[in-house]
Amino acid sequence: MDARSSTVEMLWESTDPHKALTKRFGFSDASNAAEWVAETLDQHWDLDLTRCGHLVISDHNVIAWIEVGGRHLVMKWSATPDRFKHLEDAARLVAWLDTKGLPVVAPLPASDGGPLVGAQQRFEGECVVPVAAAGQPIPGGLLPVVAGELLSVENPRHIEDAGRMLATLHETLATYPGRPAGRGRRDRTQLVHNDFRSANLLHDGDKICAVLDFEEINHDSRAADIGKSAVLLATRYRDWGPTSTDVRDTYVEAYNDHADEPLTTAERREVDEAVDRHLSAFGWA
Image 1 (cartoon, rainbow, N blue to C red):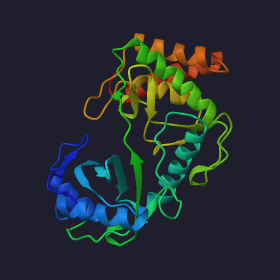
Image 2 (image 1 turned 180 degrees about the horizontal axis):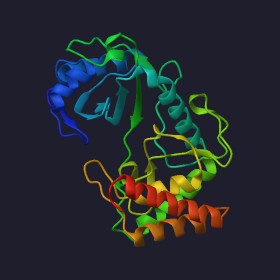
Image 3 (image 1 turned 30 degrees about the horizontal axis):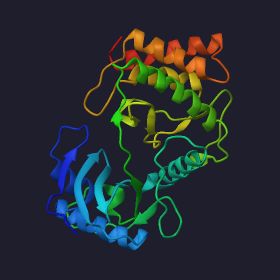
């Protein structure tokens, strides 16, 4: 295993990534983390790590960009075991969406057939995450790397593709037979992505090739999800700002034109209300 080139960075926070790696996850350094990744791959996927390139920290999650036998993969794990059930539900949902032909990144099944594993951390550093310090197994998953660029709202085609994709995603999610985290739908609600924006959308120049990060899934109205994503569609990791009115209009119209059931007058009003609410919440009104 080659861990010498392992680097650590923060996805969006302005804090020391090396201190975060220790305080939040219990690793003494990047090499220690790479060793743990190698052990976890061997134990739960029966794979040999060739190289651990770099580690990216997002809140209490780590994304490790790795190479296994010439394949480029991503291993992701969380330092909050109490979210294990929700993360496992999200992983199972993504695997189901993959069978429906949607462009998602399905987790690679572990040796036991599950989409996630409960990996045991050694906590060699001074970890101050209470639930992790209790020594509970932490949830982790393995994903293939998909080639593509983050969706750009500077490209009208990207905007239209995003609207159409959200319509397709909503229609498919509405038929999902599972109940993520034990929650069922309420009146006028359905399962929604809840974080549909540039940072989670890859475009290959012809189409959206991957919808990422279903960890914020919940039940809400499709209009609420449209309104939120219309405002946040341009946001990435450290680049946050509202979309323009033109972008939002193009996006919503593309959704509406593609949806099997066009938005009703009441839903149009709800979309507008959601847009105003999120603009105000982020201080962009």
